[in-house]
Image 1 (cartoon, each protein chain N blue to C red):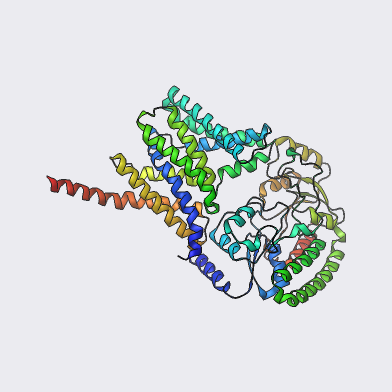
Image 2 (cartoon, each protein chain N blue to C red; image 1 turned 120 degrees about the horizontal axis):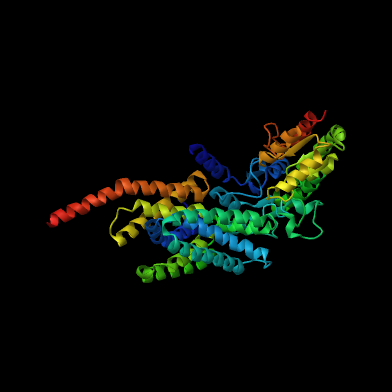
Length: 263
Length: 297
């Protein structure tokens, strides 16, 4: 791999790592709670927040866009937290419904205000290859805060806290790498490691699956000249399959043997 | 996959020659660079006739091509606003940044039409700088060719004479061809057509077409039920001869209209590669006129 290819892959890989850093631990929790599509719903409402701000006439630029997006995401987090407590048995269905409502509310608002559409596209279809190092700094700060809060508070985080944390993580990452890759980073490492009992081991393996998937995807993207985000989604899935079917069974057997030897 | 990899390798191999590296946003400018520079330039074209130039997926080869480019040739007038600035920033190549000689926008050199008197947010994704689809007017091609040859001489002074003689040759052939086209297009004067978007406004101005309706009046936003009903009501008593669109635009709206009104659905090549016979600027114009002739009885 030459210097030029490294300079293409460098920022994209760093973006991938940042997104994975928060999404792997949050993904295991999302999977446990059975609210898989929450990131789609929250990202969509974040987009709606930006359209609404635009419609109300603030020229949304820079930080204003971010504030509008986070406000939207937090509102969604609040509503979804409330429905989670009120109707826990249909929470997943309600998340699905809020996703289509937010998406179609966007279409309806845009019929009057098309410029919001540009912001919505910017917000939901980030492209990992076009990331610059200077864009990574704010996302790095947000990711670090999310991670610290998560590890510090996760055992006490019953309700709104989790949804709010999630809103921040998703709003930041979707703009960087787009909705497909965010969904993949959240769910794929979590399902491939679901049989691992130890919490710490599971997160470490999840990170491994994610990092291997990202690296392989970026390498394929450069060699095959393919859009990076889409390739990484596929390489993440393949990395997860290899882990769940080959690597983990081997690790588990060795683990058992060690236990037997001890006896 | 192997074939794509081979293509990338091929691209890398050819670029090692000391040719002028040109990055082009749309196929029509690729053809113009070819006319003016010939083998002196290695050209990478970012989009095909089947891609909407408003949108583009980031691929590694695009960043690579912009990074080594000595000159980029794009339409401008905000057509590539969604991706070109990102691509330029990501590539970090000073030669082709905004304001430097290596940054050439064709639309800067023609008189644009449909410049909104005031930017009304209700108008859709309008271009405040006017309609950017400038290439289907022979006068515009002439003006852009002039300016582009100037720019080629500026970024590659060693080949100045080469560019000048190719420009003279191109302009001579282009004006001969234009004369022939202008005989053929007389029959289109006042021809009534509907259009998907405003992609053909310059063509319509040149051919004196009467574009009676636009199916997506606010670009980027599907028409509402009320708009479609009004359109049908307006067009039913006196239907246009057909409805035109580009190869990359959604076929559903024009299909719907052509079925309702029983009129022809006409896909014009729009740019190089938009039909199998549109291989350069000359054949693009030939094919466009021939396609319209087929539907004009």
